[in-house]
Image (cartoon, rainbow, N blue to C red; front, top):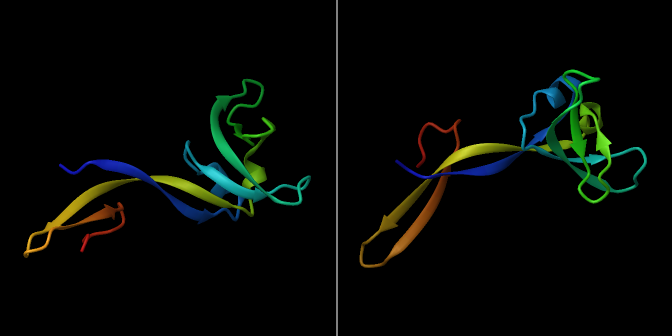
Length: 109
């Protein structure tokens, strides 16, 4: 069995439904209305009992909280678990190569 690791796949967030479908652990790069520059938001697993189903995104440096609609129009970095495969060649030279095999790849080579 090969070890696994996580890579982050850039994914455009075009609709609120796209935003609501993002898994926990996602980071998003967005332009917020009150900021001139790009901001990174991290999806939290905190729940608000007054708003069932609401998910919070936090800006790490400001501790400001946003809802899913804040990431619409941005790019999400979605965590995806991948298998790690080490290939070693021994044709007189010692080389190794690391392959990250994503769930959507059928053949790693």
